[in-house]
Length: 342
Image (tube, rainbow, N blue to C red; front, side, top):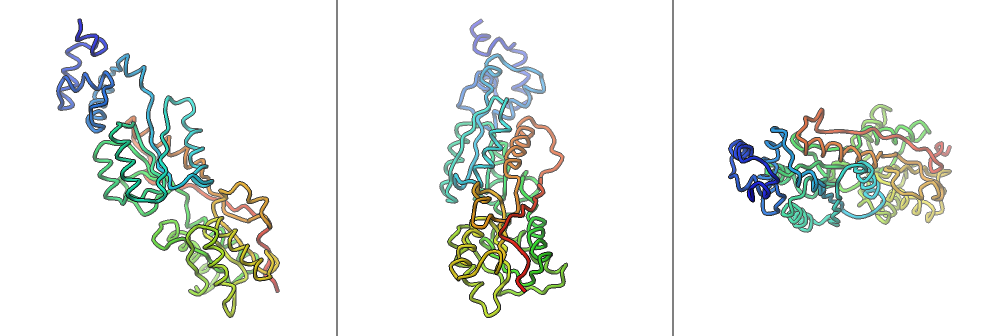
């Protein structure tokens, strides 16, 4: 009788069957059923798989089935904040607790904090712009932790599910907008060269120019660091060229704001003298900038919502229709772009 109470009245035959199928002891199965924390995530997931196959859910499990989900973010700013908002929206009605981790883009801090969460046997993980490389993420997967990557930092293999924006087409849309306005010398302010976002957006910029029959001029390409001050610095370099651009495409909105500041500081006007386009549409005050910024809208909340849906499918061991999901972006035309000055 006491043994039945300890395992929420699960018959010994059921426990033995689960133990035999999952290759663990009956004691381990009992501890999983009773929610003990001293069972590894990999073992717990394996045992739970066979529990589900047998159609058994213990009273304790059903009562304490609140999923603890971790999410890593480099920083708590508008961009990542909108992704987290989407995550919370998708968790409405789901019995789950979200544990955000701010990493500040520090590899050691991220690895350490993720390991701490794994030791707490969390149910699943959303990595946003993870610092871990593909091999490290695959090892985490092999340990049994379900996870998905939102907005990957680098190219990841098919075994790792990702959700991101189609950055190549997004960049093409921005560049084509400027081309339609008559601009032919279009400067770009990129992000760091090793970021997948930078690589894809540069590819889109090249493709749009090639379609218009415009050769690539390397002097029109300046590297930024995603912050406004780097957009300011890069724009000043572009404006100092013997033949400066008539338009600037910054690979995110912060750098675009910095570029507008540099244009104004040089005595020129936006968009009368130089047009400026950003990307992300993550800053809430963009419609109130001087002038309001034309930008590429990324569906950041949708990234968060889909990340949760995909993660739950993985946690429930359901098949995924696709492992790499790319969402479309769209152009938001405001007042920072205009026809090329004749």
